[in-house]
Image 1 (cartoon, rainbow, N blue to C red):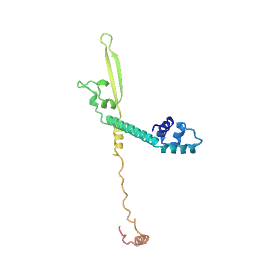
Image 2 (cartoon, one colour):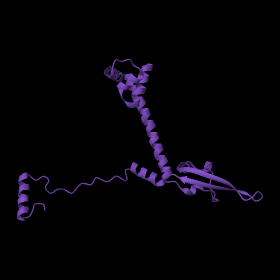
Image 3 (cartoon, rainbow, N blue to C red):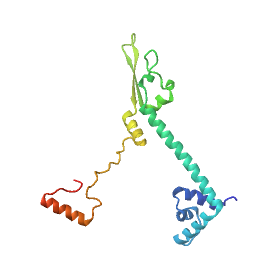
Image 4 (tube, rainbow, N blue to C red):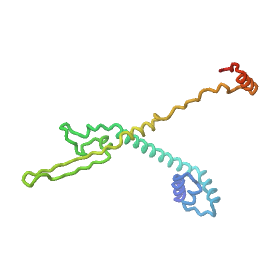
Amino acid sequence: MALTPKEQAFVAEYLVDLNATQAVLRAGYKVKNDQAAASHGYRLLKKPSIAEAIQSGRAKKAAGAELSAQSVLQGLMRVAFADARKLFGADGELLPPTKLDDDMAGAIAGIEVKTMVVGDDDQGGIERTSKIKMSDRMRALELLGRHLGMFEKKDEKPPADPLDGMSAADLVAVLARLKGGGDVPGG
């Protein structure tokens, strides 16, 4: 069953923050107050066609978020594992940016080229200086490591307390032995 334009607006607004009351208000439904909006939102969420549209919209959002997360990880890997040797050709000259592969180009934070005329008019020449600023490799490695959980401290359990599980009578006996200098059980 097709949705009405208002129902489509409700679905779109609901997907923004998953708040049915606010979605009803933003979609333009005429309601007396927030309580009426909440009731109407609840009724709309129960309609199978709207529930299906919301489920479809959430699936699309999730797929888009996954691609985005994957792109971020790919970008971090480009920076973390960039090989500066790929900036140069076999002759040792810096390659033009159009000749760099995607991984190398993605690892560059900036390029600065200065061109100067040197010498006099008869024997003058052009001197070109290029500066390549690479993205922060250590930061990229740190972020990748965090993503993989490599830097999380393992849950270390404190040493077992020898008094755990002892009854009150046993604890009193231990204290008495400590005052008298006797052996302590488990100690």
